[in-house]
Length: 221
Image (cartoon, rainbow, N blue to C red; front, top):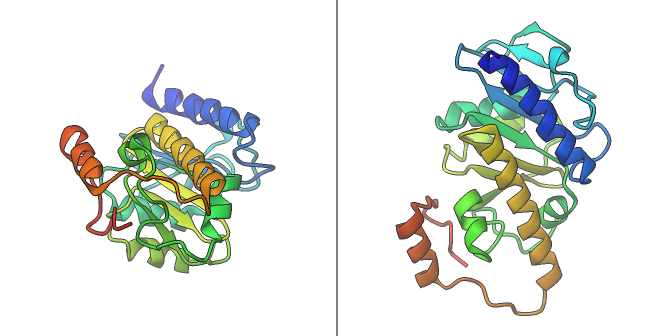
């Protein structure tokens, strides 16, 4: 089995898993993976992540032009901007997951760190999460907003829209997206209850032991 064939099947397998667990409803959400051979694969427009066909995934060249498959998601500019600025990214997952969307709408959210350091695994998988202002879906201006983050963040929340998470593998991107969703859920459950977050010393320990990379303001809570 070629690498591309395996990646096509992986996109469909992970997409179905995310959909069946209610993490992105209807035809929302999209997944992309960079290919070793140049270009990338992305899920088509108006396609449910629960019912993807490996043969119909959109194959794009490095400039984002469609080479084969169905027409791609309108969020291509979003994926392109993250790949351009975050060189280590090999896969990107964008969902409309309930708790992450809810978090993105709260007034107190720090755009440089949408979540406080709540758990070790959140920091290890997501680092800090940036919040980008609202743009209509598919608006090319969202790409400029992502580029403005200068590749410092692997996890980003689009206000009133949903999370966008990059990983060095598709599996890593999916798992980090799930971790972000669970942490957003925890935040909403504990909101107003004055919970204990990880201390600056505990965050520093995670950075040192696990090589967690945080933007300079990543744990400023």
